[in-house]
Amino acid sequence: MKESPVTRTLLSFLIFLTLAATPALATTVMKVEVPDMTQTSEWVVRAQVVSVENVDLRRDGRGLFTDVELRITEVYRGQKVPQRYTMRMIGGKGADGMSLWIPGMPRFKVGQESVLFLERTSAGHIPCGLGQGVWNVRPDQKGNHWVTQGGQGMHLVQRDHTGRLKEAHATPVTSMRLLHDLVTEIYAAQQGN
Image (tube, rainbow, N blue to C red; front, side, top):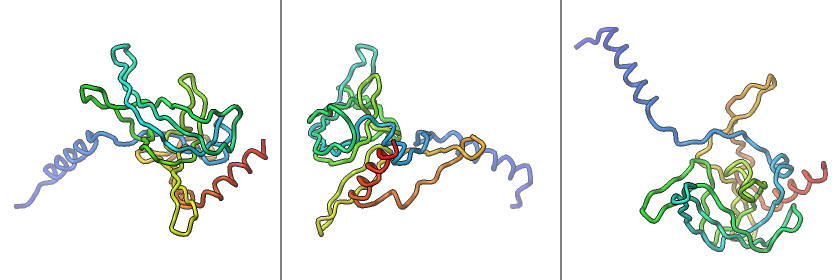
């Protein structure tokens, strides 16, 4: 059976509507490079996650949160950085099973070790650029420590030479690198200050 041009157009339109109605699974955020994250962040630290706890403040009209307790093991930038710090992140799971998760917002697990670029907000210190400010640390069999940048669920944008926003592609070279190289870049960014 041969399709008419009207049938094809209608089919194409229905497919477009179906795809357009699919919920987005990414948060649009400006791409931030390590030097800019270093300058923006009040603290740049290496830390281990001690505990992760859901906090339900809906009765107070405030929503669902996750408290992430950190044990700070190294400080690369910052003054008066405590040895332990609890970050309150937006999103979590309530006692009734209701969940709120924001794409691009980092999620943490007990035992996770990360380099964190933490900027100061009215709610405390949180990762800069959503998951861009979280670099997970993993040792290899030879004893080298590698870092991989967080940031799943983000649609990165940047400004072009005219000031307009355009899609920013993730740079593969920054997705996995030696911890030493990341720390060197953090210190170099502070020298330019």
